[in-house]
Length: 276
Ligand code: ATR
Image (cartoon, rainbow, N blue to C red; front, side, top):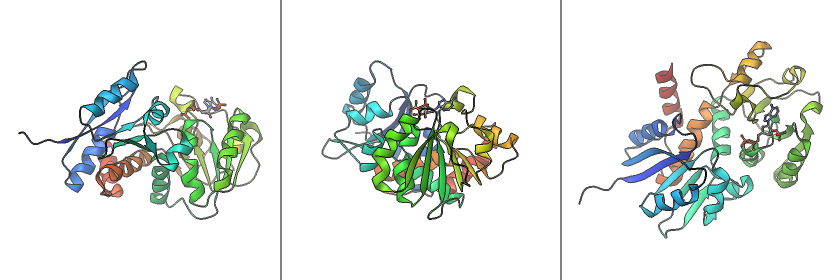
């Protein structure tokens, strides 16, 4: 019998642009794990069926990206606390007993990347822009890291609903995007989807000027993201896009599947060099 190689994939739509196969192949190489990892285009109608067939064919796990994170979470048999709170997952693992386990490594990926940047210390004040799926996925690990969060959203009610859900985990308050308290912020994180359409979130320049460092959860291969470009145009410094978060969330997924934590920094630096 031919050697069986454990199968993994990332599911999304669109998916052609995904860097996950490249990142996961670097981790596998580094840790000498035999595995295959493919990019799979999810169908907006039949995604659940595709996923069931993928696992029925013997796959061990997968990453899930937009727009399927909530649907994949609902399909799982069990889930981690952080996936439950996010009501979304970016990682699925087929357990030995056949049950499908959902986790969400986005938030821990963000925290890991903020550690790389040396941007995370206890009791910092963080302003998060956006209260959609991306924000929901990172709130728990940030609160667990002792951060005080001001959650600003264009639609105040959505930020208020998240605060109700997360307030038992730490200090968090909801504000409208147009009513951000005028105080300094150690870090401002863009978790809106505005940049995906090439625009920046409708946040006042005076609000951005209250920040000491700026993190965009989105990333762009070569050019700056719209948010980072906007910060630059205001003369702000300490700017980072979300590429490190992408690599770090992938490292935490890899750990869930293989039980070995890859060296995130080494792979991050290598990929940055390759992309330059
Ligand atoms: P995601 O999963 O990427 O977070 P989402 O759940 O649809 O996507 O949430 C999108 C977030 O970006 C929301 O916080 C949204 O604000 P609203 O809740 O008010 O819609 C925010 N957003 C999108 N475009 C925006 C813009 N131009 N200005 C400000 N916020 C924007």
